[in-house]
Image 1: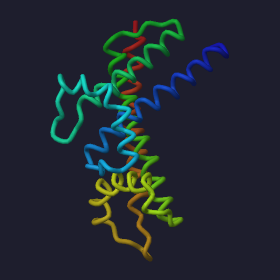
Image 2: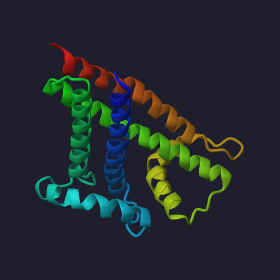
Image 3: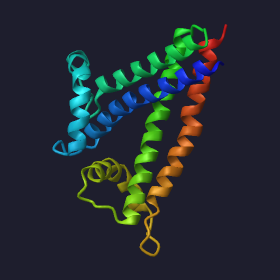
Length: 192
């Protein structure tokens, strides 16, 4: 691959990664009912609503899960993959392209949660300002899924190991669930 293609792929990963993260965070914020008044929530809603408003007319929420945001995130992944395949001079097979996109979206969601849990636990260790909007936002995303784990795990010496266990589980899920889907999608996309 040429230097230009490498640079183009890096830019694609960055731009589409940021856009997918916006919509995944929107899904998570609605799922865990993050305070709407939080400036970070306001940012998410302000920049995702222009795209989501028309899609939500067709695809409603399923419970607390924003299916329109999930669809937009998947379409963004598929567009990114299509552009990456084009950089390599290839045309992917549709089924493999879709499976690969789903796998990468799942992997990205788990990676976002790993970063959120790590940042949240690090800020609690160093005593970050819990009134800061970003820390409140992250706390509201991380604490609800960690709560069942915290109830089952004893604290040792006042230390909470549930974030470490959650991160370990998320890494295992990336390896055992997301990566096989990505590998299957890549195989189906280029199989000929």
